[in-house]
Length: 453
Ligand code: GDP
Image (cartoon, rainbow, N blue to C red):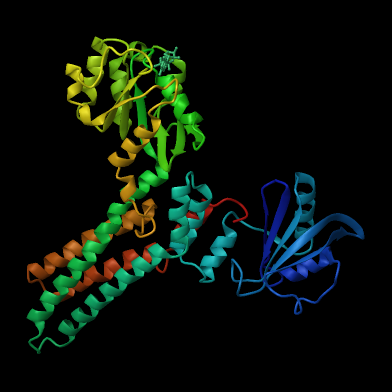
């Protein structure tokens, strides 16, 4: 039998999901509804109350949701048993399903079926993973949009344009005796130009998408007692902050992902800040430089109650050429330095005054970041954003081939050569939506899924 079945986490309720032609038959063997009804009578998108039984003994009271083909997540018959949560009961029901004809689902099996059955394309399937793993609201929004098919539509639109180029090429190839070649060549060039422009726009959104997905890599640097920990804590304590901690990728560090006022920040080396109190002295300016090198944004913090020290000057010299914000801290106390200080004048447009202790000036800091990274311009309601590296690579490949194709026209090469490139562009784009992928790629993509999805 081809039922696929999974258990979804442990919580207040447990959900066991079955999909496949015979899933209602399996259900019948273990579920006794309060008001019995035949499968034919039961409507899709409905729920029934009853008990799961084993040899006449009640295992749990449950609610079962019914979905009838083709109107379900997988397009197959589906049911979801909502039981009481907790390992024991959910496991028991799962076992009963298995004993009565169901098979255990692989990770991503349900979404894979939705893809194989043609309800969603590969790109949409991949966005399901992104929705699940979204670390911020903005990221979740982008992924949901992809799931709804916004990027797929865009890719199809571009593919259609390329098909038109193809048709034009065929005419030239098939009827060389007509003197249409010259005009058509011009037309083909224009069409390729338009395709290239659209693909490049999509490619560019990847960098913006990357910010949404991965956060702006931010390093807070400053000499001992400037207020690094205090600033960090102020950011993390902010009510709207959603914090996820995970191992840093490049060194032995903890990175914290924070979304604050819609701004996704990945704070790097925050462990270092927590531990090494006298950071700059201890780790040296060289190491601070390394941290800053890794960052998309450096927040350099200075104690405004003290004159600038040599280390401060070194830090200033170091950040001159990189995206940075200067923060003068402890402005609740009388200041010894401000924007008029000689060494700081150069930075006047990126200088802010705050009090980390009193949490003053943080909003200005967030606005500054928003402005620097053009976050306000990333309009998720209008723009289709590419967030997946696999898609981005295929788009970049397609762009290269558009350029090659254009070259063949410019250099008056035989038109068949151009058509070879055009075919390859179509293939690259078809790989994004999954019309043209190998079993291996499908396998690899779905293996990233969690169980039950
Ligand atoms: P770090 O060594 O750079 O991490 O600095 P800390 O965050 O540990 O701060 C050093 C000292 O300065 C602590 O005693 C903080 O309470 C104090 N401090 C930090 N920010 C402020 C501020 O805005 N105003 C005042 N008055 N003190 C602050």
